[in-house]
Image (cartoon, each protein chain N blue to C red):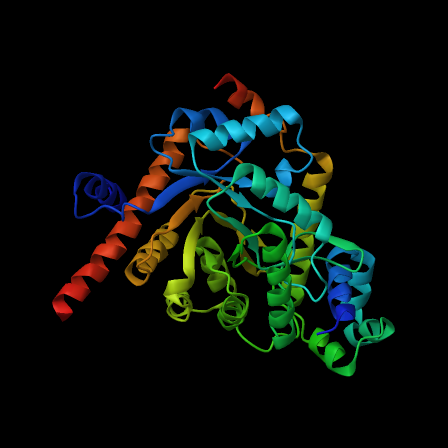
Length: 306
Length: 81
């Protein structure tokens, strides 16, 4: 039995080593995981659904989503709004989001701090905006518009990037902290994205965590990735959601547990190359254990300080 | 930051011939698109490896979306549930 297995056993077997009762752990909904998720709702507290996959859904699919919401709390996660832009977010997309949120009544909705289009060009995925005062203000304005139309502020997620956005005049964590402060939105902290960016751009992920306001961290994403080769000899680390959560990400989750006192929602994201459901459930158990260990460490430090 | 700068970045990510011209002569290509002196200077310092990898990653995502690879019939599981 490895250290991780021991941690899981301890976390499940000890009253002192369990995550806060209000912490929730879950998976992103994927068609390939549907049967496994539905068969294991005793071990899955919450399910995240991708907003854009529900837009334009048939009436039967809509009813099915409402059925799912009766069995497990849902989260709505957007991937294509692109609020980190000087251009106003698309009102039509916001209206669709608002309708989905009305229908599903999620615990919260979330979106990425990314740019996904500019002018008439669809980038296709999440691009990091240049980190400047102008994009902080524009992003906060877009998030305010989104909150007004949807009726609730989104949690906002840090993204992974393969390049430092040009024209930036501050670090990623400074930019994110400023957006959080200016927008009033809480942070959906993707720890694999922090891990990936720390490998690609050489910063200390613990320093990154230290510079975030722990009171503003409301949810966590976990995922996996892999190294990719460039045309030269260089390598970069890609957040691909196709691999298991690596050990350093669990370590970061424990660090979050030591810093954040509020209840957290932790979601494991897996988009393909699906392992057996038992593997995903085991990764969720490891996440429970890591968060619990961090919280216990903070409790011990607090007790010894008294 | 101006919208024109954002749009130029989006073009760099999505337009391979433009990206090749830009990487051969960054300042000249940026000037041709009407960017300011400060914007051109920032683009001259761009992370070239990161730009190529990002463009490759975005192209892969666009291709996935275009192919509609994600199954849409997940609700069938629920209707049986």
